[in-house]
Length: 412
Ligand code: SF4
Image (tube, rainbow, N blue to C red):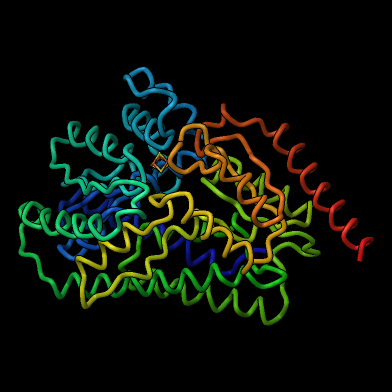
């Protein structure tokens, strides 16, 4: 069933890109390109419009044009084994093409005045930003955050907080205006509200039957990624939350006849979202929660203490923690969302966000007593994904769960 707020979402995403396009053409505003969990709020407080290459790359994935561009980046020295967001985005740039043309009539991606990144998610975002820094001859400002920093949290947060402070003078130079801490507090307060609302939307998936699925969430997370910090995003999530709460109150199911409930761990397969969504709907087994869509929830933001709290929030993202932390996180979600099985997407070109590779999938199955399935694929490079094989594996997985439920009923 169509989510009504989807119309509003379309308008909002269009507004985001049209504003960026106008700023790029008329120079009426400065533009910062930023990694998805980079210091966007800081840039916004200095008047920058923020553009997210990862969001653009996801568009390349969902429009299935990524495979046309990945070889272009490969031919320019970027390995087929590294992030296919990076390779498809750089390839599209080198070909002077963008899905924004077909979607919004926008000729080219907006030109950056500065590039920002945070290695809290992976090293690739830094290499990606430096490529464009060279191309556009603009400053590249990075925040360096180590991974698995659950073990050294306090020092890391302190260092990141200082790094955030340190980039302010460079950002001021590009912005041509002074940093105002009250502006920063205001953006952070709006960003926090966005994150709280998005969290509530996602939590409606804990109801049985779920009013929305992971595949819906991948679409509706757009404003939390690209417009957090702006009032429009908050207004949007209030509307979406009201709609989901209404569905819960009326018992409206995203997947009628819901039988089993899954957790999706890892990146989406952007070019196959619809197919995957239809497959799980046919099996009456919705994916009701994921790590990925929960990645844009930043409860630590505190406008009273903006630099430290932003550092804390951006150091706390799932992808940067150690396996013990991640396993506890997933275990809590499994319980809250009444999960019957965990799907681990092993994304070929994203080692940082493929969590099955060091034994976590088996450890969690043993600990929680629920089965898991590893899906081999990729976020953007569909050459790494066999749909036929995956469908067979998922069907067999659902049968296995069905059989074990029957067995349990027989025993009791
Ligand atoms: S986390 Fe993975 S998908 Fe995201 S930018 Fe890094 S390598 Fe690419």
